[in-house]
Each structure stands twice: as C-alpha cells, then as structure tokens.
Length: 476
Ligand code: ZN
Ligand code: MN
Image (cartoon, rainbow, N blue to C red; front, side, top):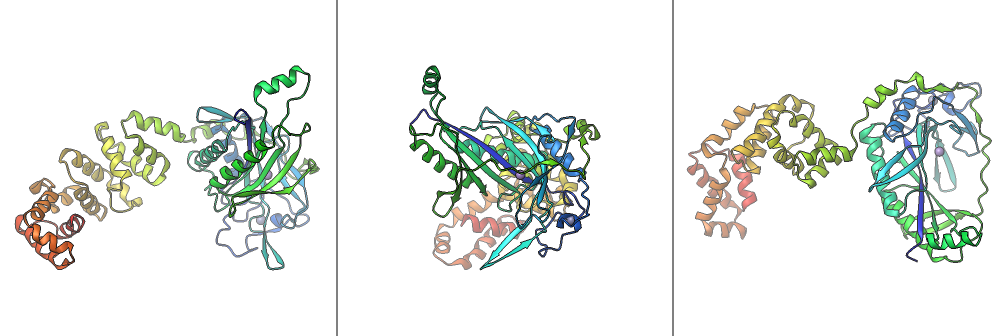
C-alpha cells in the first residue's frame, strides 16, 4: 500500500526545571526527596489555599514559544480542567484552555516545517506507586510546572516523529535551557496520534463522486518514554492501520493503544472514546496575564542558537563535519570549544575541533581550567606548529591542568630538545631491539624496564618517565 499517507501529531509534556513549583513555593526538585515531603496547603489542594503563578515558568514558556516561532497573544489565562484521579487532590488540574501563552509556531525537520498548534502551561499531578494490592500516593510532583507542546498532524513517518522529539529535546535543554528534558527521568513525556490516509488520487476520486475520502481510525498511543519506543510504537500502529485498508470506517473513530516494549507490540486500551468533558472554566484565583508584563525582546535575546545554526557556523570554519556534529551535540565539549576558539587564529580551528572531539585532553575540564585557557590555546597551536603527537599534547595539557604554565610544562617535557618527538625515540628503541619486543609480547613484561633504560640513555635522562612508560605500553 505504498501510496497511503501517514499523519502523525504529537503532544509533548516538558517538565520545567524551575526552583519552585508552579503555584506555590515548594521545591521543584523531588528527585531525592522522601515521598510527601515537598508539599504545602496549595499543592495538597487544601480548601481555602490560594495559588500564585510562578513568573519564571511563564517566562520560560514564552521564551520557548519565541524559539519555536509561535505567536505570543497579548492576554493568556489559566483554566481549571476537572477530572477525578487519586493523584490529583484538588479534583481539577490548573491548565490553559482557550488562551494559552503561545499559539501556532513551527519546527523544521529535514527541510519540512512541522506546524505547532500551541504551547500551554499547566501543573503536573502526583505519582501513584503500586505495591502488591496497595496503592500509595506521593504528592511531591503535584504542582510541578509542565509545558505542553501540541503539534499539528504534519509528521509523515515514525522516524520523523523521533527526529522531531530529539530536536525538540535539544531546544528545550540547550537552546532555551528550561528543562533537563531527560525522557528516562520523565521530564519529557510524549503522547502520539496517528492516522493513515488514502493516496491523493483515490481521495480525489471519492470527492468527484461527492463522497468523503476514507481515513483510517486515529490511534492514540499514550505515555511513550523513550525516543526509540515512540518510533517503534508508531511503526506498529502504521502497519496495523495500513493493513486494514481499504476496509476503513467511513466515520471518524479513535482508539487508545498502549505500547509493550518487551514484546514490541501495541495493545488496545480503550475504544469509542467520547470527547472527555472536563468542564473547563477560568481559574477564579488567578488573574489573566498580559504578555506586556514580560520583556519579550530580552527573552528573544536570551535564546541561544539552534543546533543547526551552530553546525552551519562550524562548517564555515572548516571543522570536519563529524567533529562539528559532536561539538554541537555535546555541551561539555562545546563549552571547551567556546572557551578556546576566541584565543586562536582560525587556521587552528580544525585541529582544536579534532583535539576536543577525540579526547586529546586526558582529563575532564572544570571551572578552574578557564583561567588557563590561553595556556591550552598555546598547546593547541604547538600541536600544529611543532607537530606534537597526541601523547605529548596529552602530557602537556595534563601538566597545565595540574597547575603548570604552558612554558613550564613545555620545558618539563623537553619538547624543545626532542621537538616533542618522544614517540619516534621510542619507536627507534623498539625497532633496534626486535628480540626484546617479541619476548615482551610473549609475556616477559619485566622487559619494560629495559626499554625505559634505552630511552633514558638516548635522551640523557631527560625524558618524562611517566610519559615514556605510558607511550611504551601503548606501542608494545
Ligand atoms: Zn506546595
Ligand atoms: Mn496536559
């Protein structure tokens, strides 16, 4: 059925990493807290308690909207969405119904614009923990700010849905920096809906006959908690819907399915879902919010570049494409890049990129390293101009990391005497003593001392023994 067209829409809940909860001052970091310790009358939903909206959460939602090309309406409001569930003590969730903070917008995936419907802000519910025949409730998470991003059904394949999510994760985590966005930890949760449509010529033929084109049912898959599961579940649903063609219903129908990752299969949860009636009404305890209360220009200026923009910039600087890809997707490596690039001439960028991406720095950078940026930059330069090996470069930067200046580290390693070329001295020692190499490789490891001695003789005792040991072991 190769001409059937798949349409996928996503609803993504993103947990914001604000310091406090959405409508009270309780801590929003429940990761290590004992159950029900981060609670107060507001998030417990006690009668008479009054919510106050978290300004940071609103600002971050608007900032995300600006990064995703949304319109920011002049006025937004909160509404109550009523339903009963044991993890929702108030009996309603404060959400946004018809006046969200962000409307429209889009995100480009593989050259295709995926339209967004809206982004709204709401509070999370608590957690139910099932143990045997007992169910326990933990309300630490109740009231956590959740940003809900809703797309139009513009996604045309399971793979594109995965790409969309991965891209969105980068944006909320690295571009607007509002969430840790870990799917495993539940910061990013995805519901997907999928339908399959007739090829356009059959649809046209139906219309010519005055009939509605047929469409498969819509399958909604809830609570997908990894990118891989989103893709796999959607593939299964697509397969099922396509196989039912041309016996599709003439009336629109919707089913909710779940995904079982152990058996890689989907299973029916609910059929004939009526549109739930949540009895939305405006939250009387929270006044409408005007976007004029926020400095949109300032928020725009805080939006960092998208991964694509960063990638383009790096490619223009002649960074190898694979290195550039790593730099933009690894925040720690990108951080090193940003600290060192300004101190170097453009001609050294490719070698800097290679050194960072391939872990030529044999330690992890910490805050104190940025005071030594210019020493590291000189080491990178020396790698190019003095043709330093990866090993020597590693020893040199490790000494800098441990507190030496570039100049001291350089003289300690006798780079100027051997041109940093301890490796070729070692290689020569190995080539001159093939029998000993053979014996070492057969297990006579005490011969290591013999080689060290040879090299020390050659360098008149001035080579760094630790370095010699390390390089020797590698070569042997
Ligand atoms: Zn609270
Ligand atoms: Mn929601």
